[in-house]
Image (cartoon, rainbow, N blue to C red):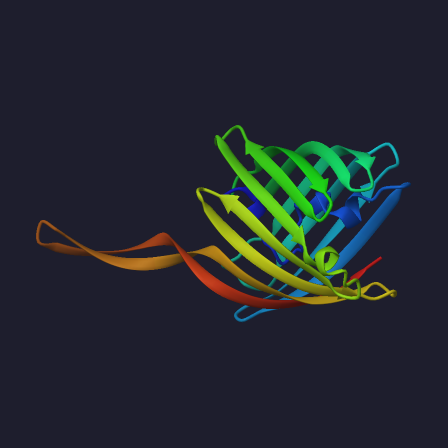
Length: 222
């Protein structure tokens, strides 16, 4: 799967083009760590990112750090360049690489734009001939409510769409917490029985399903 499926609970690793990150007036760096709690999982993730006055930015994320042997630690890195044409229009592009413990790395080129409260990023995986898209709608700007951040995000890939509604709050001390309601695809296993030449065979195969998920997160940004 494309790198944007790694995890949404890492607070949109691919959302480098969101306006709070794109507002670069000087050199800035940020480190964060989060604890994510869902209906059937408990995991941690963390990141480091920086951006410069010249428009160069980079980040690295680690996701799905937990005690579940069925999940892999995943890593996402990106580097790119962005140009602020005005207060409400930003354009950027770059290179992204993702890797999990059991899967080969995925390399993508991305192009993104922010216009007012809308953000869109396209990812191109030349090796697998795949194009994916991330869209973000900043609800907080639309309702002019700044105390709590609210956004609606969509991840489009393989002809289908995953949706995420996020509510979050970051205090002046750097403590961040929030809630995510999502409708997304996930991989599950299904057992099937086959009959051949009078023999019965039972095989477990991976299948893709769609479900509704709830998760909360708490972390620290500095």
